[in-house]
Image (tube, rainbow over all chains, first blue to last red):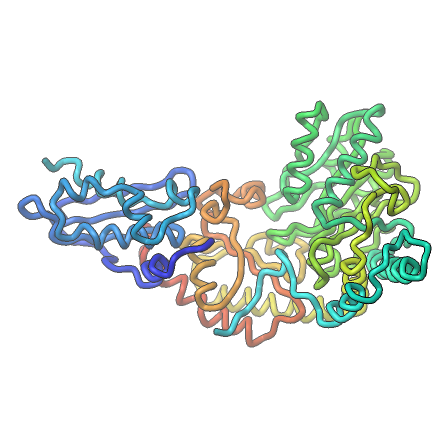
Length: 119
Length: 387
């Protein structure tokens, strides 16, 4: 599998790993087919994501995209965060093989799931 | 970076002696073995010699070896060849759920053509019960195809016992010997097989060449028709350089078999016991079954196989996994599924497969880096709680 150097860096040195105590929003999404899972914790203040952390169990692409997206949404307003697509995340990390696209990019679903109760 | 290759069930490095034997065949002894002139006869002699070397490795007669393009062709030839030559007698085939895809998909293809296939299950150690084979036999059974050793978990099947059952019932018996040949002793007479597939590149020979053992008197429908090469069994000008390399690899495999088995199994055991000591919550698949000396398939809880493979690769270590995340189909390994593993369990599988060029230092390097990799991935997992 040919992964980009950037993706491998996010896999080996993932940013924003961990849990947030007293998080304002939490979501866990998984892929029922392959078993990859991502859990996301958010702190939200005045319509803006002020902090985000994640944990994930899955392939290198799942971990790298989860980390990248978690880092990316810090500072975004909720509308911007909800608009993030699997493609945005994959493209930013140099693209993913077709089969990996649907299974391993869990972050965009996790973000939307976490923000469900918010206006 | 130091590169360590522990994926020898996928392919092996060619031995220098193999390469050296092949080189003049490209540029000097390049004749077509079917030609009657000097060049052709030189090539013919090389071909005959290689055939003898390969035959000896599995205790076959020289005339019983047919060279093909590899293990996949050998499996296809054996199964389709019998299916077509025996269809007047019956259309029932017995095989297992843990066969290599070359057997699995060929049998599935035959199902579409109106053949009936019994897919035998295996124990949690990956073993086929010969009694299951006996019970599956019907009056219209024409072929039993059971692999000798499994490529993923290394389980060695009771081929001799199945061979006796097949012989008593007068049914053709094929065994895929791609993983067993060169790793454990193989005697096709003792195994009582009519057909046995072998591959060159799994035993330090070149890719693109293999052989099918066809016991004298076995009628197979040729799958490639043309100039009638290989005694009218497989047409196409022989891959002489490849076959010469295969012959040398077979000779070396036979001569070094006992010492290599011992050496490789010591390395494998060092790896397994080291991992079990340094990493909690790992399981060795088929640990108590008869196993290939070079193969270790482990499952790591709270870590995913593709991520483990990529992490090891970044440290210079090449291994493989049966995780769904590494397959194009996103299905977990059919072998791990067949031995009763859930997709979640298969998710964390890692296969180490060694060869005689591996060293203690290489194994120790893996024992040094893998625990840290597992620890790192587990720290990322939302399911993992430190004990």
